Image (cartoon, rainbow, N blue to C red; front, side, top):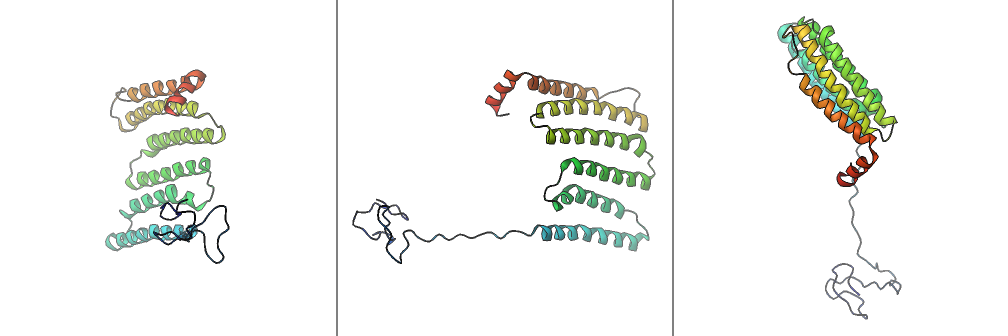
Length: 232
């Protein structure tokens, strides 16, 4: 028999540990009246953080620099010059990071399009404020295509369990094709080149990686072998 606190070996007749003084508890004998068979355990229970209160504080700390930047910009320039960029960036970060936390079980199928829509509004503001005339011909189709691809991937992963290899394989292929669209729209909007220079490289990588994942998903023995070796 051993002491439950310090682990020293005890004799059968011992009622207290000779080393630390802990009362001896024998499993075949009932504990003495009024004495605990083992030392009291002191636990410090962590207090739960109020979710709504924490998010309210984050919201206030997001609005505070927005108000300060707008007031400073208006005081110095008499109009909104640079504070709009700061305001838009902070609001975009809030929508992407903080807004889903307000919901206990936020659905990413809903929040992903909302994030892309918020990013599109921010780019539209920059385009209108700077007079760039590149939003409709470049930013909108690129952002829209990327948003559709990501939303489709998130939806399939959420509602079709076990389709990860096919979803990511198709995603690699589509993003490879998106790189070709990006270079085409850059050349069309900003008139940089008349031919394609760099987009075929990510396209080739996307086709190879995507095709490999799709083949692995179709070949059950190969998939099981990789799962055993790499826990995929």
